[in-house]
Amino acid sequence: MIVQKYGGTSVGSPERILNVARRIIDTQKAGNRVVAVVSAMAGVTNQLIELADQVSSGNKPTNREMDVLLATGEQTTIALCSMAINAMGGKAISLTGAQAGIATDGEHTKARISNITPDEVHRLLDDDHIVIIAGFQGKSPEGRITTLGRGGSDLTAIAMAAAIKADLCQILTDVDGVYTCDPRVVADARKIDEIAYDEMLEMASSGSKVMQSRSVEFAKKFGVRFEVRSSLNNNPGTIVTEEHPNMEAVVVRGVSIEREQAKVTIENVPDSPGIAARIFGAVSDAGVIIDMIVQNVSKTGKTDISFTLHRSDLDKAGETLEPLVKELGDPVFIETTKGIGKLSVVGIGMRSHSGVAAQMFATLADHGINIQMISTSEIKTAVTIDESQLDEAANVVHAAFNLTSKP
Ligand code: ADP
Ligand code: ASP
Ligand code: MG
Image (cartoon, rainbow, N blue to C red; front, side, top):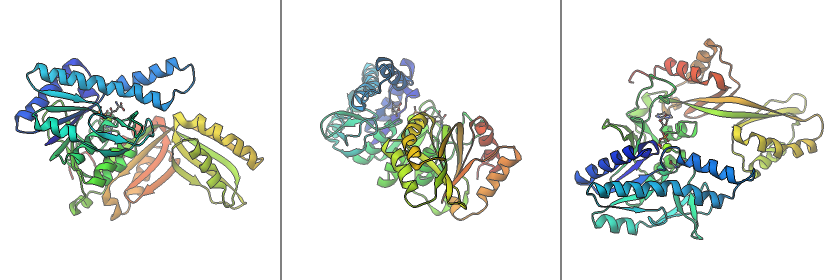
C-alpha cells in the first residue's frame, strides 16, 4: 500500500498530468495498491486568491468562502488525473477530501485534521481501483469545505498514509529531494539522503517550503516515515525519519532562508510587568503571527521591544498597536521596517557541538553582512539581515559549513 503525493508543478500542465498518470499506473503494475494525493495545478491557488481579491472591492472575503473557492483547484486536478489514468487503460476514481473521509475542525483556511475515516478509500482499493484524493481539503463538523493551510497537500498525504497504514509515503515534487539549501538559491546545494523529523521541521518552519511544516509535525507525531523525491525522474530522494545516533555526527544539516520579513520596534516602553503581555496579547488577538522577539536590557526603567513578522501582516500589526502605544503615553513610539530576511542553520548535531553560531556570525561579518536579530533553539541558529543580502548570505554560510561535500 503506497501513498504518493504530486505537487503543483508535477501536475502543472496536461503533459505533466499524463506523466503522473503513467507513473501511478506503473506503481500499481509493480504490485502496489496506490492512493495518489494531488495538488492544484501550479499557480492555480494563487490565481484563485487573486480572483477573490478582485471581486471583494478592498474587503476581505470570509474564510468560509475562500475555502469553497480554493478547494476547486485540487478538485480540478483529481478529475483530470483520473481521466488520464482511465484513458490509459487504468482504473481510477477521484475523491474530494470529504469523500475520502478527512474530517477537520472548523478553522477555515487553516483547518486541522481531527480524524480520518478511510472506509471508502479501502473499499475502492479492495476493488483494484487507483484512488486519487484531492489534497489540502477536508470537511468541518458542520459539513463545510475546509482547507489545511498553504502547502497542505503534503499534510493530506501524510495523514492519509497514517490512516490507511500505508507501507510507503512518497512526496513527489519538482526537485530530487530535500537539499542542504533551496537549490534555486544555492546552486551547489546537495541532496540530503536522510534527515530527522526535527531537522525537517525546523527547516520547513524557517522557510524551506519543500515540505509544509504542519505535515512534518504530523509525520513525527504518528511516526510516518516518508520520502521526498522527483516526479520527473527515478532518482532516490530524501528519507525523512526518526533520528538515530549517527545523525548527530553532522553538525549543520541545512540552511534555510525566509524572505519578506518585517520588524516592529516599540521604543521607550515602561519596563514593568504586564507590558509585553499587553503588546503581544493585542497582536495575537489580531491574528498576526510573530516570529522572533527581542527585548533590550533596561537601565532607565524604559526598554525597547522588537519582533519580526511577515511583511503582509505589518500594517495590521501597526494598526493594532497604535491605540496601545497611545495608552502607554508619550514618548512611546513604533518603528516599522520592511526588507528583512531570515537565515537559519539547522542540525541536530548542534546539540552536542559548540561553535556553530560563532562560525556563522564570523562568516557573515567577513562578507560585510550585518546581523539585526538573533534567535536560537537547541538545533537551530537564526539571524535576521537585510533582505537584499539574503542570497549571498545563504551561499557563503552554506560554503562555510562545507555543505556541498558529502559528510
Ligand atoms: P510542490 O508543488 O511539489 O508541493 P513546492 O514548490 O512546494 O513543490 O516545493 C518544492 C520547491 O521547494 C523546490 O522547487 C525548491 O525551490 C523549494 N525548496 C526550498 N527549500 C528547499 C530545500 N531545502 N530542498 C529542496 N527544495 C527546496
Ligand atoms: N494548492 C495548495 C497551495 O498552493 C496546496 C498545495 O499545493 O499543497 O498551497
Ligand atoms: Mg508544496
